[in-house]
Amino acid sequence: RAEPLRFIMDDVLGNFDPERARAMAGELARAAEWRQILLFTCHPETARILADASAAARIVAMDARGVSS
Image (cartoon, rainbow, N blue to C red):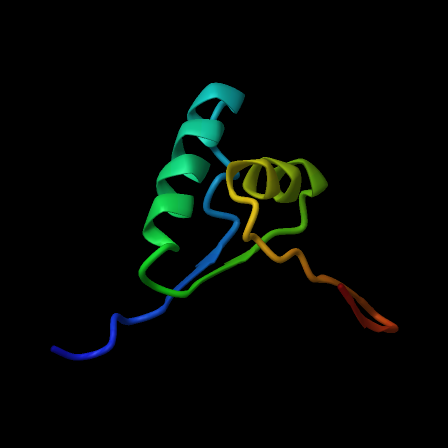
């Protein structure tokens, strides 16, 4: 009956080969339909894989000067 807990993960796809990374990104996209998932990565390719897995994904780039969406 309670709200689903958020998932917060850091570089969760870092050790996956590309095929498994895409498969896991798809599973995360499905889970994101009913809960908030925050994924942090310093790898642009990981961000692209996640964005490709879900049209609803929001990518926020962060650097020393600030944040850009």
